[in-house]
Length: 404
Ligand SMILES: Cc1cc2nc3c(=O)[nH]c(=O)nc-3n(C[C@H](O)[C@H](O)[C@H](O)COP(=O)(O)OP(=O)(O)OC[C@H]3O[C@@H](n4cnc5c(N)ncnc54)[C@H](O)[C@@H]3O)c2cc1C
Image 1 (cartoon, rainbow, N blue to C red):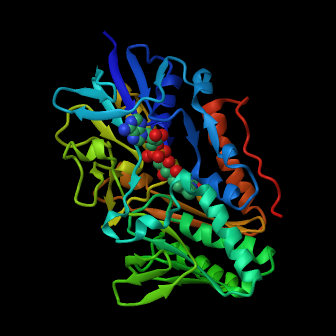
Image 2 (cartoon, helix red, strand yellow):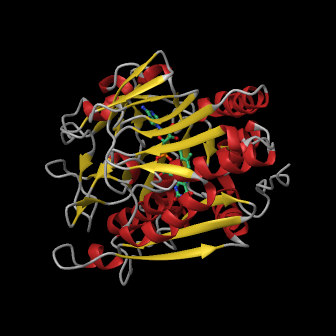
């Protein structure tokens, strides 16, 4: 009997895991099924091109029914919702009641944004939801129109809680908003503010270059500001008693595991599934792994960053663990490029390889590259690398129009 592997989620982590099984020379003893509630794949790093008006929102999604040739031997159950898990009975229960048995279960369902702990935040836009792109585009246009009409505007990017996925994304959003508003000729009338509930949400080595960019772009970063309520979508109140009156708020909702995972009792108080960095195994649940945004890992008292690159690599590692691949060497090297407008970008590349090899003694490192002329090109290469991995050479390349 082949071993049954079920992977929940066809995002970065789930596909990284499935691709590793598909590419393995001999995985015939393993039956792999990927389940996803959606039938499309998206890369969050393309969304800002849509709200900045450089591509249609439809260009930020790819049809997963077209990825079969890259995943030989893998069954994909798309548009299929997982309702619950029976970890003792080793079953996944689908929305229609069907129960699927597994030998190994790989959880890669990402996270959900949950604004319930911050009164009023639900009226603001969640900048980590694909559904927000159109509203974000309209917000930028409203800001420009109101500034042209002579009104002073404030755009607040409010990070609700840490950890959150792609730590550079709120800063990138502020920089791209700066670029679009500057090109529209009204930057002097617009205050752009980013708040975080911690002193600095990125790796420490990134602080110097980002601080310089805040100054250059006149973006105000306010650390240690925990947003506690939003009034009428126009006033943000913070734990230290400060208030900021705003025109538009782009929130990073506090993130946590989806409800069907939470219901298993496997989550920590922050809402993620704790796993060992060296295996991604879920303690106390036989054959169960959790990878990507949904898992919680602490390294030296700080959270392991959540990013597509890391989710994919965790998926690879777990597939090799299940296949018992001899001689496999894991690399845990991230690549998050924060675009800064006008072709520039900052590459933040944290490396956790040593921590995976040696969870007790291994230390992370982080390289920073300030790519003044080819930052955007590097980001597009990164995006298109994943499109090729998942959809093959014939996959639709992501090619935004030049900034207006
Ligand atoms: C705006 C933005 C910009 C970003 N930029 C970058 C970047 O530049 N670089 C980078 O490395 N990362 C970036 N990220 C982060 C990256 O997208 C995530 O870290 C990555 O997607 C995590 O992968 P995952 O597999 O854990 O979850 P996801 O990719 O979110 O996939 C989870 C999948 O599980 C499915 N699912 C959930 N619940 C169920 C259910 N009940 N039943 C069936 N299916 C279910 C979902 O439909 C989804 O397809 C960005 C994210 C955003 C939002």
